[in-house]
Length: 393
Image 1 (cartoon, rainbow, N blue to C red):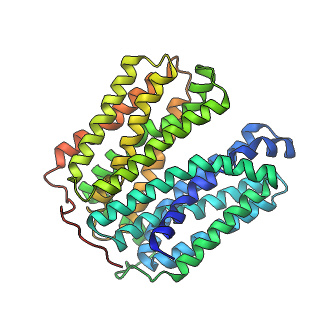
Image 2: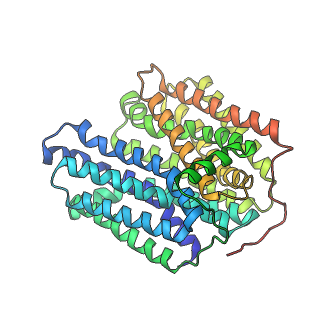
C-alpha cells in the first residue's frame, strides 16, 4: 500500500469515528428510550479516551516500534467498533465508544510520527499537507455518508463500515517495514521520563503549545456554526450545510496549496503570512460585526484557509526540534491540539450575545501568541533547508 494512502487512512480514523455516527444519535435516543444528552456522552467518552491514549501510544511506539503499537491500536478500534455495532443498550454502546477512542488515538498519533520517520524536509511538509486535505475532506462527507448508510441499511452498519476501513489500514501497517531504527528502553517510569525529556526541550514545548492555539477559531467555528447560522441567522439546515462545507473547503484548499508551495517558499514566510492573515480576519470579523451570514463566512474562510496553509509547515518545524522520542512528541502535539479544540468548543457554547465576535477574538488570540513566540525564538529554531531534502524509508 502506498505510504501516502496509509497515512491518510490512519489520519481519517478520528473524523470518521466522530462525525459519521452523528446523524444516528436521535435514532439511538429513541431506540433505548434515553435523553439525547446520555447518547451524546458517547462523543465525550470517545474524546476523553482518545486524548488520554494519545499520550500512551506515542512512547509505546518509541519503545516497541511503530508497527506493533499501530496494529494493536487498530485491533482495539475494531473491537470498539464491533461493540458499537452489536450494542443492545446505551451502557454497552458507551463502553464500546470509549474503547474505540483508545484505538483511534494510535492511528492519529502515529500517523504524525511516521511522517517524521519516513520523510525529511519539504517532502514531509508536502505529505503533511496531503494528510491535512484528507483530514478536512472526511468531516465534510462523513455525516452525509452516515445518512446514506442509515437510509439504505441501519445505524449498526456505520460501525461495520468503520471496521472495514480499519481492516484495510491494518493490512497496510502489516505490510509496512518497521521505520524506527533506534528504540528507547524501560517501562512506565521510563515513559514518564521520556515525556519529561521532551518537555525539557524548550524549543519544542514552546512552539508546540503556541501553535496548538492556532486551531482556536477553527474548532470554535465547528462547535458554534450551527447555532450561529441556523439559530442566529435563521438558515435552513440545507443552506447551513453549504456554508459549513465551503468553510471546510477553505481549510482543504489551504493544505493543498501548501503542498504546492512549500518547496519554493520559505517556511517562516508561510507561517508569518498565515498568522497575520488570521489576525487580520479576526479583526475584520469585529469590524463587520457579525450581523449577516457573509460578515461571518468571509473572514472565517480566510481563517480556515490560513490554518490549513500553515499547519503542515508548523507541524514539520515543531517535529524538527526533536531528535529522539518522536512518538512521545507527536502524541503531545496531537493531545495539545485536541485540548485546545475542547476549550474552543466550550467557549463558543456559552450564551454569548454575538458569537461571531467571539470567533474573531479566538482568531486574534490564536494567531497573536504563536506569532509572538515565533518572533522571539526564530533565530534558535531548526528550520527545513530550502532545497528538497528527499525522503527516506
